[in-house]
Image (cartoon, rainbow, N blue to C red; front, side, top):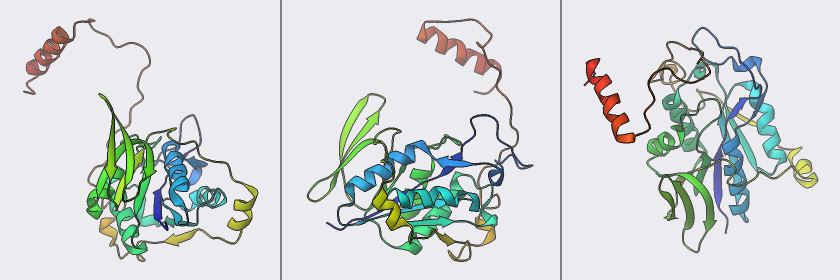
Amino acid sequence: MKRKLLVLVKAVPLEAGEVAMNSDFCIARDRISHQLNLADMAALEAAFRLRGEGTVTVLTMAAESARDVLAELLARGADRAVMVSDSQMAGADTYATAAVLAAAIRKMGFFDLILCGRRTMDGETGQVPGEVAAALGLGCITNASSLEAESEHFSCTRILEQGIVRLAVQVPAVVSFCEYAYPLRLPGLRARKVSVGKKVEILTAADLGLEPCKCGLSGSRTKVMRVAQLEKGLRKGPKETNVTIGAEKILSMIREKGHV
């Protein structure tokens, strides 16, 4: 079966230590090296396994410095790589990011499945998969650990706090994967040779018909006002091991501060 699969990916900072931030408290991504987000690796490998005679396209919104990450994904077997890159999109929160990705997907056309990682290593919000699905009017399954093709639908295993659940997925839909759900294959010689003739396609805000007010900081619903370094070590204060008593004490403290 010829399936059209899209994988949303993100290039995250490679540095293990501190990264530079600009005056808007956004990561200065043009000054750092990037790597593929960990959970996105699982989504990409899942797409490769489901591709069959179809195609796998990767899509990201990133600065020009992330081009090499997408080029590497072509070498690993992706059929097409598209990057939305525009200075107007700098500083976007999850809402603005999802709006841009949804606009790019509409321009690119229909996909049977849109796969992605459940969260990114630099943001850890886990909001973009659901926001993209909402913008496109699609169903969304999060925390997937496996995805298999059935005769008329896809079968998915989803991890919940209470355990796991098996779901039937009707297409089109958005599915986000847990880290390590599928180990991403290494680039082979054949894939590298094929990828030589492929180029990373670039889309701008103008290409997507997006106004500047809908992109980046201007199109964001949230803004970082302050960044603080957390202190290491145990928190100060009394220790309570009884959950019920502890919850009552916390509620009492909240009431004392007049929050409820």
